[in-house]
Image (cartoon, rainbow, N blue to C red; front, side, top):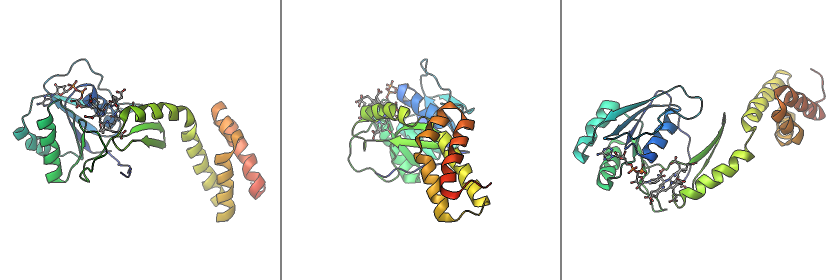
Length: 224
Ligand SMILES: C[C@@]1(CC(=O)O)C2=NC(=C\c3[nH]c(c(CCC(=O)O)c3CC(=O)O)Cc3[nH]c(c(CC(=O)O)c3CCC(=O)O)/C=C3\N/C(=C\2)[C@@H](CCC(=O)O)[C@]3(C)CC(=O)O)/[C@H]1CCC(=O)O
Ligand SMILES: NC(=O)c1ccc[n+]([C@@H]2O[C@H](COP(=O)([O-])OP(=O)(O)OC[C@H]3O[C@@H](n4cnc5c(N)ncnc54)[C@H](O)[C@@H]3O)[C@@H](O)[C@H]2O)c1
């Protein structure tokens, strides 16, 4: 399986089932999308989006049968549908409806590395250091391992978002100074590898910027 990144801003994600898994997926997608969760029961779960997102999750109390599934697609026009109920037949009907309509779908009740239709997506564990995002999956083999590796990567990626922003600025500055592409590439490479810049990011962006300027000067001189 090959990971891709989707932009869900302005889109709707339709989730069936509000157990721990449905709630987790709803929080995840509410970071960007409008999320509608359909379930007969909502037991004491958190539905506020992850991170600093301001979106919200719409909860609809209903217990659709497989035959009731298509009208939900018409009502909400989803970009992605999540089947997270504890009813295998219903989850299968949700997946089949999505497949017929060419809508991306995720089945919470199916793991394993067997072949999936191309519209059936797996939700990875993610580490976010905006704008950096790392996703981990095990081809459906071991979600517990994905979670464990995600926790380990969280430490590894601390500061990566700030590094992405800093190097984007560095690239823009070097372009403005008419530094040629080879020197620019070398300077940016040295910045992302520099322990002193990473350390500076931990201490605040002014320190990081100063360290980066010193590293860049080694490549292109220090004229402004
Ligand atoms: C990564 C993560 C993302 C997320 O869901 O947000 C995610 N599962 C997470 C946690 C987790 N899931 C399970 C456990 C208990 C330990 C265990 O059994 O292993 C734990 C750990 C825990 O809860 O501590 C059990 C489980 N998972 C699936 C089944 C279905 C089945 O086999 O029937 C069952 C068994 C149900 C049963 O038998 O009872 C199915 C899927 N779970 C996936 C993703 C997809 C594969 C990703 C991959 O390729 O690795 C896939 C295929 C479909 C999908 O959901 O997209 C999230 C961690 C988020 C984080 O913390 O970072
Ligand atoms: N992907 C994962 O990480 C993962 C982890 C554990 C379990 N699972 C699988 O995913 C399924 C969901 O897990 P869970 O722990 O949240 O289960 P759960 O049993 O706690 O929740 C199931 C939810 O589905 C709802 N539901 C029942 N009938 C419905 C209907 N007709 N329409 C809409 N919603 C309906 C229930 O009210 C409940 O909110 C499990 O059955 C299991 O197979 C997946």
